[in-house]
Length: 129
Ligand code: HEC
Image (cartoon, rainbow, N blue to C red; front, side, top):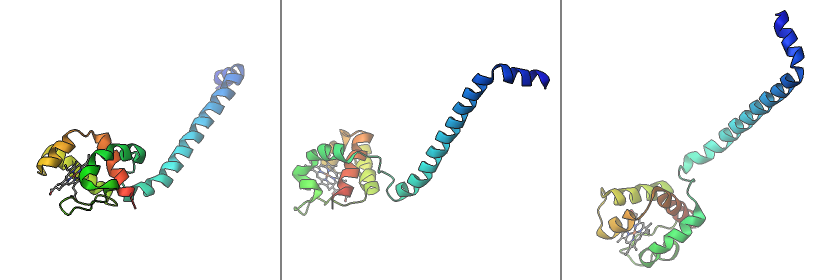
């Protein structure tokens, strides 16, 4: 007990810095915890909010020729993608890519897409009013 008290007194400065650092760490941890609690519920409704809408708008240009500008198809054989749920779009694109949903055009379109592309495109179309 005596020894440890002396040690603390000797390295008092270090101890204070160490304590402050720990305090700062705990504070940062609490802030991030609090933020995740605040942010998490917003993410529940739209689990794919992670997609980058701006990137998606660029990548979605390849879809325009059939699905119309911003996914607002005017031709009956091409589905409207604008305003569709991101989770649904993501699921369909993954299914087309995997070949479990079959359509010759969409299977080859989706084959080119990465997971990130799918997230971005899904976020973009779902956000179109
Ligand atoms: C050459 C025309 C063409 C292009 C280009 C095209 N699609 Fe399609 N897409 C179709 C057709 C046709 C269907 C309907 C397929 C079916 O009947 O199952 C479809 C269906 C879809 C569906 C399913 C919609 C639903 O309601 O289930 C999604 C999602 C989709 N396309 C996304 C895309 C994306 C994203 C791109 C661009 C990367 C794209 N498409 C490019 C023709 C096209």
